[in-house]
Image (cartoon, rainbow, N blue to C red; front, side, top):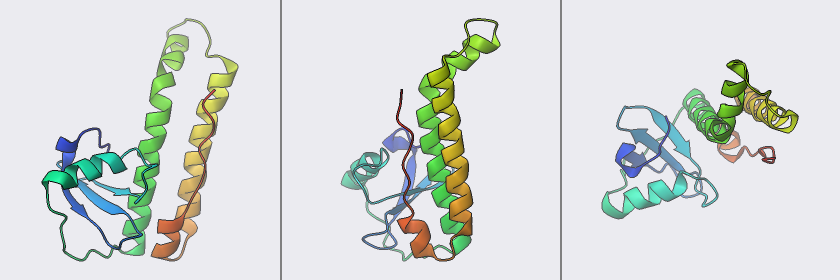
Amino acid sequence: MSIESVEQIAEVYQPDPAGGYRVVGTDDSQLWVPNSPDNRHFALVEEWLLTNSLDEEAYAPSLAEAQTIRISGIKTEAWGLLHPTDWYDIREASGGTATPVNIAAYREAVRDTTQLCEDDINALTTINEVRDYTFTWPIVP
C-alpha cells in the first residue's frame, strides 16, 4: 500500500501509544506507520485523525502480521526513494545515456537495504522487536 493522500485511508488503529499506527487503505491493504514525525506517512495519518475517529478496537497483530506490515512499509519507502531516479534506468534501457555510476550505486544500495531489512525483520521473534526495528537509508547522491 502506498498512502499518498488522506483519501486513501479507510481506518486507523493504534495498538499502543509508542507503537505507531496500523493503517487500512481504501483498497483493504495495510501499512504500519511508526509513531514518528520523521516518517513521511505520519503527517497523513495525523491529518486523517483531525476529521475521523481513531478506531478504539484493540488490535494486536500476530508476529507474522507485524512482520508483513513492517516490511510493506519499508518497501513503500524504498519505492519512494527509487522513483525519482527511475528515469535514468528507463533512459539507459531505451538505448540512451548510461545511468551515472553514483545513481546506480545509490539505487543498488536502496534495494540491498530493503532486502536486508526484510531478512532482519523475518528473523525477529517478538512483535516488540519488529516495532522497534531501526535502520538507515543510503544517502541520496
